[in-house]
Image (tube, rainbow, N blue to C red; front, side, top):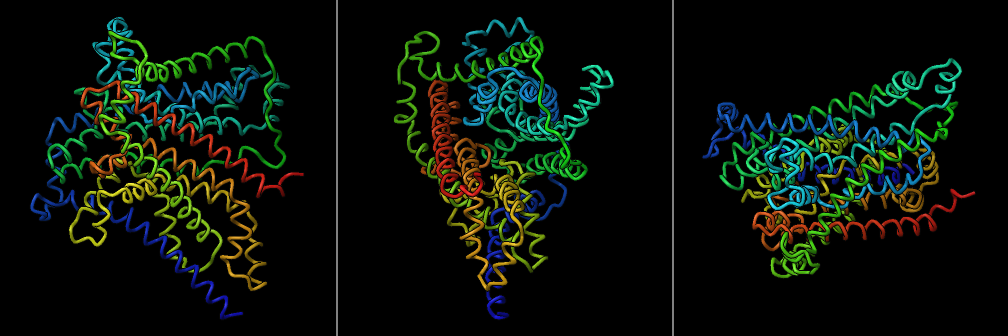
Length: 558
């Protein structure tokens, strides 16, 4: 028994070491390359902090830093209250059509973030339907900070909403019953019970929103005009000016707020106390005609804005020649897929998304299983846990830049991966690794450790327990992880914008190229196609989840 246990333990340790090596090679070393590049001169000599000092002396770059900070703060200040109101309506009212409203607000997750920027140009641009409104509202044009703020609010709203719905769903009805018994007003209940109970969700939503905005590349690139932010500065310095050292400096600055917000979020999570105890009573809202009507009207207004943004992109993609000939045609779809050869990019996107979903799910779940359900090598486990959480604090633009510096090095044995779909897939897996890892860990923690203990006492190797017990029980989580990877791989821009070649261009990057070429209609058409592909994939994953539940989760039904 001792020999067999030793052999299976060694197998688990080797597997964990492989996961650690993959995370080091495709996450830690590329990030280290950025730091080294920021400390080097043009001849690769060490200049220490000279590049940072030169950056501080460049007024235009400092303006970009300030622009990124205040735009991100403004979007956060607008989006979080709007999302909180929507989440409050979904969880604390008896309004009708809750599922419909929530489904509409989640649709932007299925399309690239720059779709909102394209729609705004058709609404308020130089040839927009409502271009006269900009002057009436006090703005010269939609290109610049006004367009970035509006488009970012649309793009990040679903992310904030999901966090706040979860936060508001966890409420103990006994607190409200006690308040009612004491004659507490509705306003006082809101400020003394609801807000304190949701404060950690509000903080998390604000941090996530701020980080998503400050690291986003697509929206400022499409609608930013001459208004520079850090994300576009990195692209211009690296691709336009080939100034890799200064680009690395900006990347580190871009990494700083993300790391800071991640640290604050981790601290807040540790201080959070359980809202639902074993004796808690789930909160159930009571019908109130006037209140429910007000909540319905508010959610209908938000849903209308979302549909207006999505609808304009769809309409413009079919318009023959905007704004002179609005007759429906497939001209832009033909131009994008055939003339601009985006069809090849679309196939590459599907390959990358499928590879990310398949291999990413395997890597994430196996890594989480080895961390949670096997023993030994505690030092290595700490490193793997740190590396698994690190991608959440690394913007995609920074990760992609690190891949340039690391994999484009001729002496690197992995140099052959550069400009391949394989590297795009690996970069995307690493970029979205943390969310998948946390999902897997949550599923595994719900399983009693007795499964592994009994298997060990019966001399059953851990991998047989994994295959026969753990995997079937956790299949719903596996489907969720795969769906998350697939959708994000189809819509990502910042993580792969530095890594493609003409042969490995993906559809989301092709949209940027079409926009730069002035083919806005074709860009809208390709964004709509990505949204349709993501929707179809979501429906297929839902069908797969239903089939998996029927096959593996029958034991849950009474």
